[in-house]
Image (cartoon, rainbow, N blue to C red; front, side, top):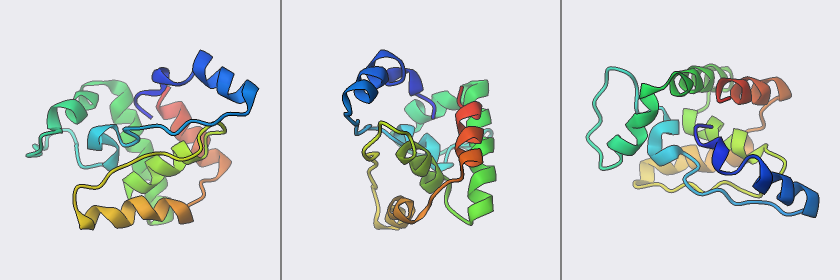
Length: 129
């Protein structure tokens, strides 16, 4: 949602045209798409600098707002919604996300049970454009 230009464009077009699918890495943008990093908050993490850079952009703030909205509608974690958006992309086989703690696993595993509506996918896509 915050690094779409890495894949979208020529690479995605080739995947679509040839029937291939991608397995994106860093699907949660070093933790930013978990909702852990917010304006005005300090997070003690080695990933804070990488994830926090998205807070300095209007796009990052829009993405968090859209994720919060969709997550609230489903009673889901923000990370689950971010992964569900990626999984809904036509040329994505499965997103890769890692957990540092056991407590983080449920939000990652819940993506298997969350299907976003077309309107929700569009809302997130628009927010991240």
